Amino acid sequence: MVIQACNRIKELRTSRGIKQTELAKIMSVTRSSVNAWEMGISVPTAAKLVELSLFFHVSTDYILGLDEREFVSLDGLDTEQKEILYALLQYFHEHRER
Image (cartoon, rainbow, N blue to C red; front, side):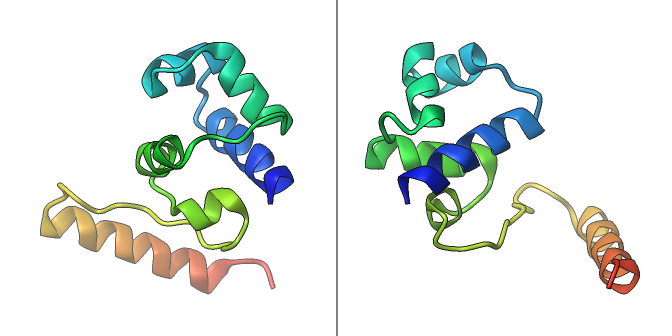
């Protein structure tokens, strides 16, 4: 589980183009704490794990490697914006490589 968490945190951070120092500032921890999470030396506290999940819009189970599903929050979007996203998802599902 620790190995999965370290990989997921780094994957989430890098896929969004965020540096360790930036994530550290957002999470109110030191850069070395983020580095330790990503290297598997330590794991985030339960509170920081929840903060990470909220920030990256994924479940804590996803970060811990207990769930493979990634979620996107639609909070704050209007009906038209949601319909556009649903149409894109449908398109991707229909055209994904098999």
